[in-house]
Length: 145
Image 1: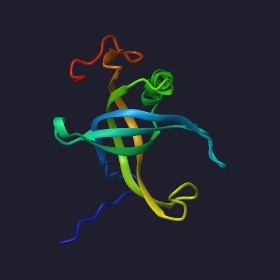
Image 2: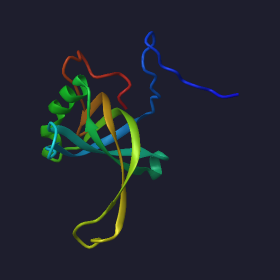
Image 3: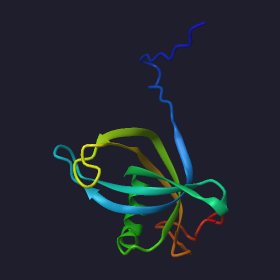
Image 4: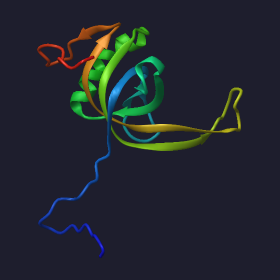
């Protein structure tokens, strides 16, 4: 039996969503200006996983997308720039590995890899351990732990 996804004039395009959720510290907040195209916000997530007493971090380089995510990111960017501890609940979509060759430094000429994705949603935020009310939120989310 063959499964097929078809698209005709009466249906919408089919997409397969791959979302990753979790808790992460925000690092390297920046505006990226490509040679062609419009500038965009980018940030590196240090996503936590594993046991709380032996936590591991996975870094995900993200493009910030969606109007709400951009608005929340803008309210947090100055705190990230000041190297405060900005912790968020997040939803990242469409993660993928990106292979590259180091162009400078001690690893010049050697292969490397990173994980990239799209930061779709910031659910809640804490700055230096204190709840942070995001724009258009009346109170910090109760599950921000």
